[in-house]
Length: 187
Length: 187
Image (tube, rainbow over all chains, first blue to last red; front, side):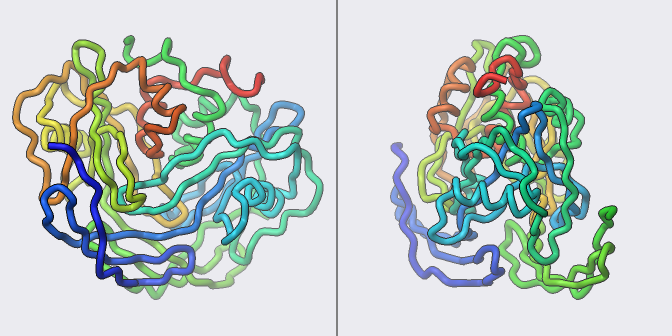
């Protein structure tokens, strides 16, 4: 058996939620020819930023999140606007959410947030030498507290669960890289 | 300004997609009292597994994914069923997707896939000493190729983008841990 791509037909918009659309399609297996229902969520790209100050601190944001209904500690980020370069979006989101700006954005990595049903990618940028240059200008309904933490605290904040957003953990994976020597439980 | 939790009212089901529901609510800021529209996607928990053989290989799965419409290389995983323990789900998904079983599942970590709009968590388990014990029994429409790769190849597969699923990268973060000494570009 060699896997084959699927094809899609009967693409129907189920819901336009503004931040994404929800669609129902019929998928056809290239392997078996059989068809079945497919759910797809289409969104523009997402971006997040690892913003570092000259003093080795990370500029984090604390927010109440409507999905989990809990406060989170995250890196700045958001939706890439249509026709916007993801690096430009990173600079914009950092400025809007925290009033900070720094060096030109450096792409650290790209992930698919959930290829099973989401069509989009999330890009992570590093911005160094960040400093406060303006008042934050969050969108209506965005309530954000700015939290500076030493870079060396980040692995502990992830281990303790204080940082638990999958894409934020991805961002720091891109930054720190893996340590095969420390892999558990002793490989 | 001290951040406050939000409250929610007028919770309406917009779409039941089987794997999740999409809801539209009105949120009320505890800080300002202002209200605004909220989108929420409710799903049961997700689970993934880092399955290792006695020979130090990872049992991976290759699939065509309907979100990105590309082939992916991932660890086994799926939806936790209602009232199912996530560790039991990890063992079940590993067996269904790959026909493998091993040691009791060991919880490596837990993330929120996207707390901005998703309510759920994703749990990562380690299962060691995996070996083929049965024929795979994928769900209808699941077409899966089983791929064994040496554990030492994983960081390179992530760096090259061959593995790019955010939650799979999270799984390996839990396993390997970060290497602050290798963080870029030289902190």
